[in-house]
Image 1 (cartoon, rainbow, N blue to C red):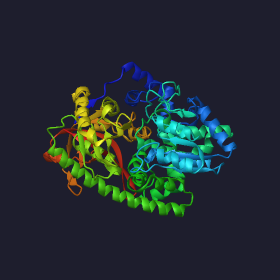
Image 2: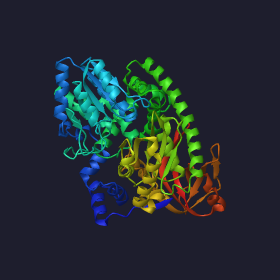
Image 3: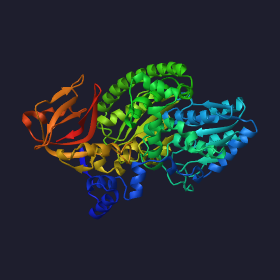
Image 4: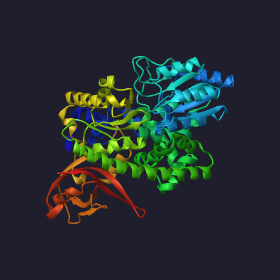
Length: 562
């Protein structure tokens, strides 16, 4: 692990912000490190307000999208809401379809089959629309590169509205409207919305046409918050507002499908981390193991008893998913050990019978042990398909673009992508990918980094500090949980190993004369030797709360020890 301590901001800036907010310089420093430099920026950060959401009509083509939907309604056309099979796609489809159904009945949904059709808009989906009399398709979380598909739909007199957040190519599809804030010619003030977030802006715009207010679309924010958490988009700007209020909906009055999922795990007061690790994997499991339609059915169901049945089935898919990804991870790790000399800068593994639905999870697991840009391939029809995951700071999408001559198709983000290629191009691509990464990755990015916000002593950890840090939530990219470094700490003699494989560490730490603090280090069981005989060491950690038997106490969540 590399420990990188964030540089201290300019002292004068810190003093000015602290004065403006009537807070101490330590809090001001943490805010400036997050790009918050003024009173107004701090107000929006600490007091998210729905009135701070941008006008949806600032998004390029929004007027065209709304006009085409209104025309479809006026002409009694059938509208097909189409989306990807992951959390972002299925929540987006549920959101737009359920909103439209509140005032128009001719709405159906379509999620492509992960195995038969693959990612994004499919020719099979367009044929389904044609065979069933749909003249308008609203595509969510996909479509920005579907030039041939949209052209094919045109020959069948089917119009497209594309709502995507992925990077466009040089040419845009010839759709009626292309909503994507990453378009070069789109001046929308915030670029980092997820696919479901774009869907929300669409219903917000449609609502304005119907004299609805933001309060009318507020109940849909449980879906938006779930997508923001699952898609790992920056927790800044509009995403922070949408996630903040979406969590309120999740914890007070969620839709029956989400309520049924929460009931399965018996958890109260979910935060964004709970959404990432509890709700999102279950929604994803439907598309990984069975079909994304199952997730849409759950999220669109308004009868709670029926939603409970759907949630129970999805719980079984999630259990099956866990077993599969554990087994495939073991097999992939064995393969890496065999081929270590061939891949020094990347991890690329393949086995034709690996389950396509879990290879993305496996890629993430491999990075935990072999910290390299990682691709996990399996057979998909006549082709090989892969999920890609990257290490912090390295743009894997750009690396794939540099190897595009060997690929049939690819798409995604800086840190996660998917692709297909012909089997005969696998080795050529593998060699090219290794070469591109070797030539472009800075050596330090091959070692995991812990970014430390500040060095503090234990006596600075007060209830007041903990209360203020709670207000930094929801956490996520570009607003991560504050990480602190404390030196000269020691265990008071209570250190013990935990977990089935004794992989976790529980401690009770002291420093100087400060009061002792409980600490937990997940995956740090191998550091037990540092804690014996009251030896002093340094620790990096987040300040956390431990809920146990109805009582809440302060604890440190250790990230590393030296």
